[in-house]
Image 1 (tube, rainbow, N blue to C red):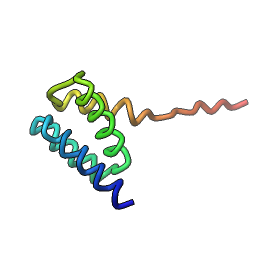
Image 2 (image 1 turned 180 degrees about the vertical axis):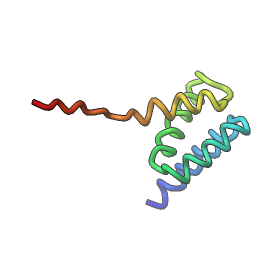
Image 3 (image 1 turned 135 degrees about the horizontal axis):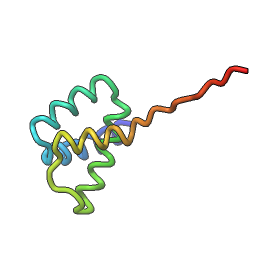
Length: 80
């Protein structure tokens, strides 16, 4: 468990180095409010960075990643 936490913190540091100030602020808010979503976002962004797909993470990009990870399921209730 402790090893996984250290790996996450290392990934988080890599990702944070590529974030703009606005993206860092948003990430901080998400990390406090939705820690599981923040972990998923860091993992996704780290893979993008390591594969060379992105260089700088701005606020809009972070919003898109968060939106793609937090798909709200809507259920339609039909009354007979």
